[in-house]
Structures are given as C-alpha cells and as structure tokens.
Image (tube, rainbow, N blue to C red; front, side, top):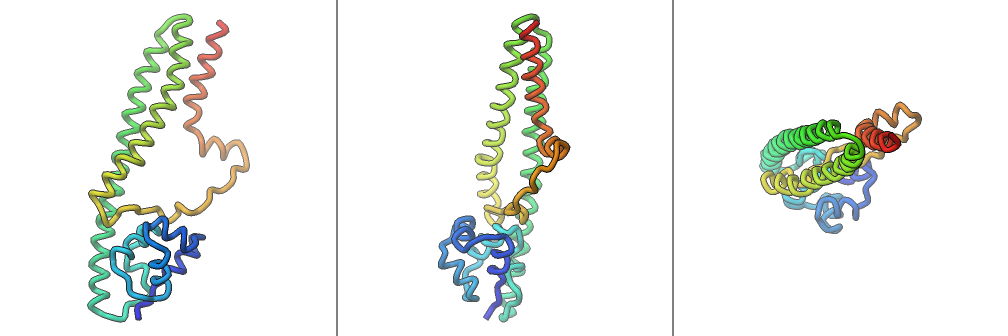
Length: 201
C-alpha cells in the first residue's frame, strides 16, 4: 500500500477535511480515501498537491509499486513545469498591469496639476476616486479573468496556492510596520489631502 502524507500536510496548514475538499474541488470522501492510504487517481492527487503548492510526488512518503512510482515522478515533472510557466507569466502580467496603471494615473495627475483654481480641486478629488476604481478593476482582471485563462492553459497548475497562503499575517505592532505593509495608501491619501487643502484657498 502506498503511504500518503496528505493528513500531515492538512494538519500542518490548519485545514479540516471539508476545507481541503472545498479548496481542491473534490468531495470529502476522496480526501478520506487519500488519508486512509487508498489508491486515488493522479488528477485528484494533483488537485490536492496544488492546494499545498507542492508536487504530486511530495504527497507520498513512499510508493510500493516501481512502475507507479515512475508514473508519479513523470507526472510531477509535468506539473511543476506548468506551475513554473504559470508563475512566470502571471508575474509578468502583474508587473505590466501595474506599470500601465502607474503610467495612466501619472499622466492624469500631471494634467490635473496644470489646472487652475477650483477645477484643480475637482479634478484632484476625481483622480483619487479614479485611483481606487482603476486598482479594483486591475485586481479583478488579474485574479479572475487572467488567472482563469492561465488555469485553462496550464491545467496541471490549476488552483495552485502558495504554501504560505494559509498562514495568518502577523499583527501590526507599531506605525512603522503599518507603513511598511500599506505604503501604497500614501498616494491616494496624499492626493485627497492636497485636493482638500486647495479647497480652502
């Protein structure tokens, strides 16, 4: 019988069987079969492996059958190759999206700064709202539309999670830690304050 370590990984990441089943798009019975050491197909193992951000062969402590072991190793190589490609494409797209947003907002910011009087105040306030709208749209396009496209292009990496995605963030203890984590808020807040100050002039 093959020895799987799905249960160990699940407990290590503080997941219930139900939560793991939901994240891997499998039923709870399949998770129970894995943890009991019963044989399941590679597709199901791939779904669970992607939740933990590991290769399929990393789910096993050992495999009794040599042919099955070779089959799993070959499958794992294909899986990790697709994960690597998906990660590279996703990172490039993320950088491109933020670069485009920065360019558009910078151009609009320069234009707003050249306006006079009350028009500058109005357009400045609108720029702040536009910042949040553009950010929300960009996040939606990246996380929903583009990631769905990548999941279809790289099916063995579909639903891949980073292994630290289950861990809770450390609490913020001081102002410096808050600034380090939420530095990007400086731009919209600064724009809003500038528009607010100009309103009294």
